[in-house]
Picture 1: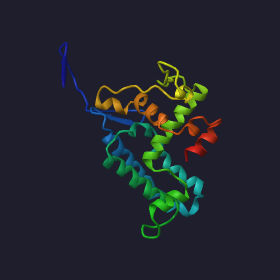
Picture 2 (picture 1 turned 135 degrees about the vertical axis):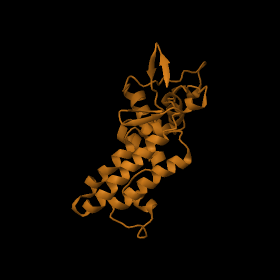
Picture 3 (picture 1 turned 180 degrees about the horizontal axis):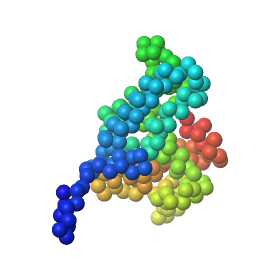
Picture 4 (picture 1 turned 60 degrees about the vertical axis):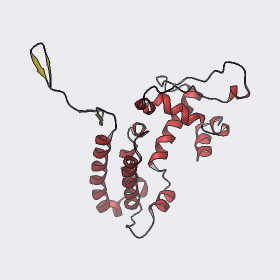
Length: 202
């Protein structure tokens, strides 16, 4: 509670904007718990409807996990494991397979789906590729690396890595995305097309 000019202002520890729940420490625990509840609710409904749906239609249920998943970079491993369990359950429902009939890793490979953590990294790498090759979207805070002197690596399509001054800064896109991009092999970064980029990235 805050008092200003004789008025009482009530402050909240969480803020929900565009479907994302932000907490005061940006741990995203509240948001991920909301995502899990939403996914589990729809999974129960999907299991009843699964025999009437095609594989492609049933797979749409996983879009909730992908929405704003760039925010998940840097969350704790235990938090990421919660999302991974949701994806494992989704794979079983989509494939219409019960718990003991198949391992979730085999189902994810057959669909094929990337693990939740790898999906986050894939999205960051894809945005870096579009920014480097096409300059889109223009609002991304990415800049090409310019060496102080000419080096053999000067034409390697590297991005400038923005240092994080505080721990929470490591979750900023301008910090972690260039790190992911620069860690990719040169053959991946130099792909001529986006389809070629995705194939080499796999």
